[in-house]
Length: 260
Image (tube, rainbow, N blue to C red; front, top):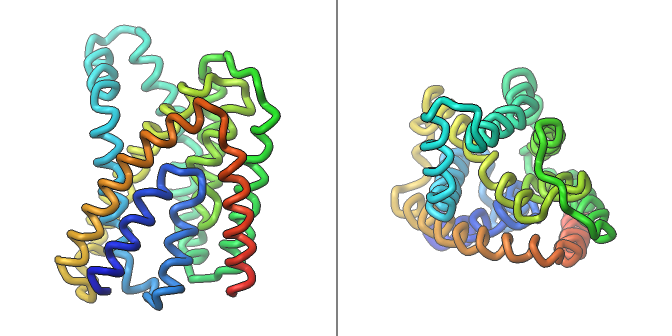
């Protein structure tokens, strides 16, 4: 992998991780177009995912600090309840990670037809939110679990995680700002957990095909693009403009199927 390819894929990861267009789907398409073997890119995928985690922490550092501070007061306050909702939302993804990890990994084989089909499904989910005009409910515990199911389903390439979780929250009637913030914060632990597992399994050290320069370039590109995408996405959800991403996912999904 050259540093230019790393730059392109890093930008792609950083932008699409938070925009509702499926980062995994775009990475699969990007790898296929650039001719990068999936087996040779695991270490890069882990690194750029770590970059997006860091970008989330930087953007939401005030919220994260307030949640941690409130939690260690050891009271059933707003912060403790919010963290409990995040914990509830992680139950479905934990089940998938523990019992279906091998099956999910087989889907990341460069099959553009499958990726395209999932992008079309993402487009349909986003389009459903277009008619949802009244979002006034706070996220409840049951809402958190349902949003968590959406996140678990989005482990497949082409089905947008942010798109699925935000759209699910909106369809449940949750407040737009709350849904977007919850969607970004709930993904921190799964990504960190997945990266730590790869480290424990030695997968970060099992691949010497990628040099440090491409990894550093990819990390920085994903980090900067991620911060930009988060701030952009918060404004998009607030204005209810997800229909444009539905159209985008439809077009890219059709192109992926045709290219396959």
